[in-house]
Length: 69
Image (cartoon, rainbow, N blue to C red; front, side, top):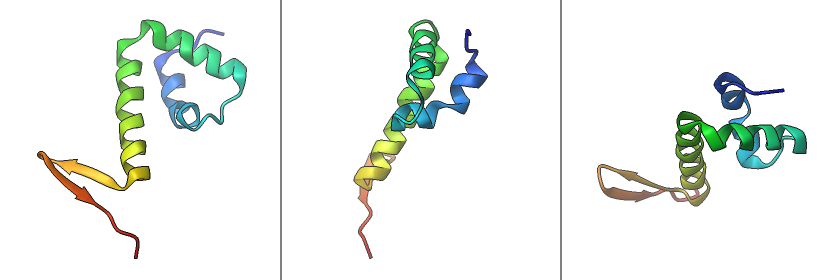
């Protein structure tokens, strides 16, 4: 099965979290090799997820860190 962009976008979170099965992961990776748009979406989404996990954000060059209550 050849994935189109819409299908990749539907599974991008699962791909990042490594919760998609091996076959789907392989199909997504094959698509990402040739699709600049989906690769950029993956990169942006990964950066947002990483920022949330680190609780550090940048807005207009200023860094903000969220503290646990």
